[in-house]
Amino acid sequence: VTSPSPIQQIIDLRLILHLNLAACYFKLINYDQALQNAHQAVTLDPENTKALFRRGQAYLAKNDLDRAKDDLEKVKERM
Image (tube, rainbow, N blue to C red):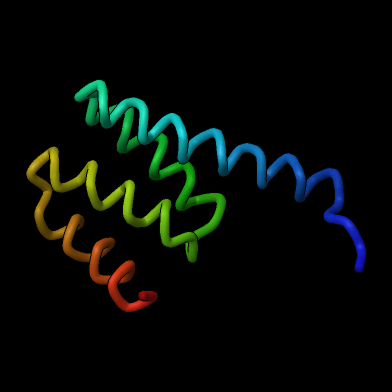
């Protein structure tokens, strides 16, 4: 078993960072920043269920129902 490359480790850490920031900003009711960080997480890993869920939550909070539905349906398909 090989360990991830240094570049992949950086990408993984950035993903975790953006996911955590999205959750924190959401709890602080700063939906614009939550959305921005969730979107960055999805950009880093488009198949990441947690990233899609966080972005869907942020879209829902911003009343962007179509985008929220798209992301949350992708989450549901993966469960």
